[in-house]
Amino acid sequence: MSAPRLLLVEDDPALAELLEFRFSAEGYAVTATPDGDEALLLAVEESPDLVVLDWMIEGTSGIEVCRRLRREKATAHVPIVMLTARGAEDDKIRGLDTGADDYVTKPFSPRELIARVNAIMRRIRPALAGETLSVGDLSLDATAHKVTRKGQVVALGPTEFRLLKFFMEHPGRVFSRGQLLDAVWGTDSDIELRTVDVHIRRLRKGIELAGSADPVRTVRSAGYALEAV
Amino acid sequence: MSAPRLLLVEDDPALAELLEFRFSAEGYAVTATPDGDEALLLAVEESPDLVVLDWMIEGTSGIEVCRRLRREKATAHVPIVMLTARGAEDDKIRGLDTGADDYVTKPFSPRELIARVNAIMRRIRPALAGETLSVGDLSLDATAHKVTRKGQVVALGPTEFRLLKFFMEHPGRVFSRGQLLDAVWGTDSDIELRTVDVHIRRLRKGIELAGSADPVRTVRSAGYALEAV
DNA sequence: CGCTTTCGTGACAACTTCGTGACAATGACT
DNA sequence: AGTCATTGTCACGAAGTTGTCACGAAAGCG
Image (cartoon, rainbow over all chains, first blue to last red; front, side):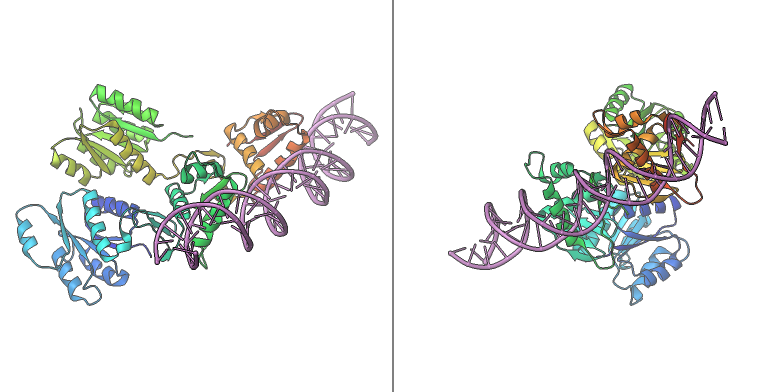
């Protein structure tokens, strides 16, 4: 599964940047624009999985963007989360049936918005549920116990899953076989160091993909690492 | 290892001291100030990796500090964790709106705050735990076990890696073959002195780069040194 | 300049470390 | 009981690394 695409339409530069950063960290591929007209173009070109739309924006107003998105066949069913100002117009806006899937009233916490977006994404694309680690073209959903590489779902054994998860929690860092045993098998396991090699091999075999390089790096006489970025 | 730097802005002396102690124990290099204006100066001077900011502080208010940090180019992307009073929902939310990355409501447990800070640190700087040595156009990441010269990744054998690391920990200093044997091979190694020459050669070959001078200096009848700067 | 000392270099055999296929033991599930 | 996936170990060969040596070049020195 490829990273879920998100179109962010917000004209406050500070807020836009913050949200773009947070959503990127959350594993979304974010496209941002402050302009309503440009948003309509981008919505068609990039076919995002979800649109976060500020009510007050330059160019075409947020609510108009919302209507037009619904009218266009290509974007008619994109989930839309509206950012609305708190105040007198609140009820009026809510009353208008523009087709938004959710509203978040300003001021809001990024965390709250992310939670709502994640909730919608889970509904649309169930595999996105829960906490998602993401390193390079790998992504791992801890709660759903699923791993994907470049969008392709990947089958791993329980041990390989834990091993990959540990690596993804510390991308780029080299771990000795002993450290991996402690972290993945448990501190009081009495297991041969070389056993790690075998599971590394099984992990590699599991996530191998034609045309893509092996992200697991072996560092001779030191251990293994998951290639960051 | 370059410890992650943390700027603590808190005007309650007891709480400040407690947090400073706990964060130090957690491995952070903590700079603390009770004053908002001073915090802005320190943020530029020390370029901390993260700022913990109390909402209610002397001098410039917490939220104003937050805004100004974002406005300054040097500090625009520093993660900020706000400490807010319970029930001050508006403050909390406005804090996030101005660019804080997370908030913790008082009263909180130090453990909770530390957990949040650690979480953000992991997200922002995954390789933070990794010390990266840097001498001239060489840089060495010990935890990732990677060496680069002018950005180019360089492949070294284990011994060459340790040798270079030792040199980079003492740039410019001349070491005799005996000293190098003790430092890189271990005190109780029974190895020919001339073997060092061979590994110096292998190191040179490994990091050689067209157009760049050899940073390894031979000091006749004394030993070797890594050219500083 | 000749002599001595010190260093750079290529070669190489001994040694480590790693990848891989196979296999038996285990436990879950039918 | 039987099937199946998973797991830990091992043995073997491939690949990389290491310490040593021999020889020649370079540097100091009277």
